[in-house]
Image (cartoon, rainbow, N blue to C red; front, side, top):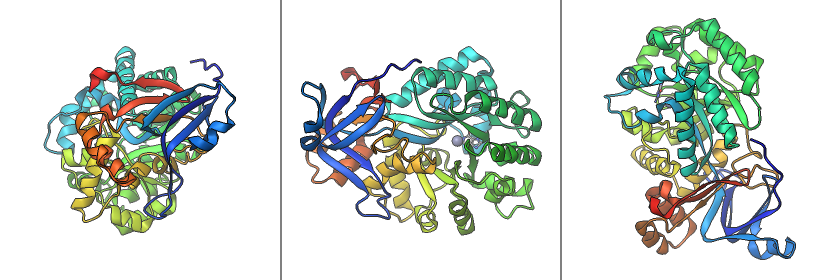
Length: 440
Ligand code: GUN
Ligand code: ZN
């Protein structure tokens, strides 16, 4: 997509963005009740109070009026599978039968570039409808699925991380690559896509059970050779899976240790789920700079378990929220917050709404080493932002009218909101979604 230079744009609304984690710092965010966001050439120029910033604009500069709504950085979903779009909400008693019955047969179709592109287009538009502007995405074992995804993402000028799944055992033959072949194809895809426009490559071993030791070792070497790529995989999601890993890798101290011993723990490594990690594992996550993607709707749907916020926070692990579609049951990060809140309660923890919005924006950007690029309104950041409507539905309007402070307002949006609460989505200052009134 060719991007013409954009003149200065101004947006008036309430503004919210973070500069720290509210769990550890009390004044972690900026809130401008009557705010102005200035965007130039797709980047943030300034974010502040309307009264002070309006004076800096040349007379006659148009101001897009979103008063009554909230502008914040676009959501970042750090773990989901685009090929599983069409099988979301497929019933199965747990992770392993769900993979066998639905996931593998569905993923088989992604060797067909036309099918992959059609699903990628729908998937990205659905993310934008939900206010998600960046995601870490699993493709399938087919290189065509990666090409289709990044082509669809480039057509919308989105900052996306994605990669080809590596899988050379314990999977159907039609999805099986070889240790060397999978890593060679991954390297070719890195050279083709990584840092092309806004694309970022994620080296993607599916999970330990579907890779031989040799494939994991070669994958670790690839990750060392390309240190600014991402790594993404699943770890400690489900008790049966954990037992399986123990039997496949009896020498490993823990499931996480399998990846660690292969050189797969480093900054820009995103570990999905992290439910059954022990204290040593969490300490190792923090020490290595690897990050945990928390997937509450998926974990409740598959009955995998409850993420332990207290333990993760005690170790100061980098955290973010993720949908894990298609095991996740919604594309909406607001609905993901809703379930994260309940998971925390069931574990005896408490997740304030401000923390949940931090985890879905700056927390995710930090987890991906992208602070200053996305996830906040610091000057120079890419202007990916959303406009949330606290009156999007009759119930939201009724509830938010009665909110007495920001925490209550954000909490109502998280618990009652979904795609309907996203009035508009912008990527690099260009509008990429507008909610139609009929979609209420
Ligand atoms: N573990 C290995 N593959 C998958 C997957 O596709 N989804 C989930 N939730 N867990 C996995
Ligand atoms: Zn997943």
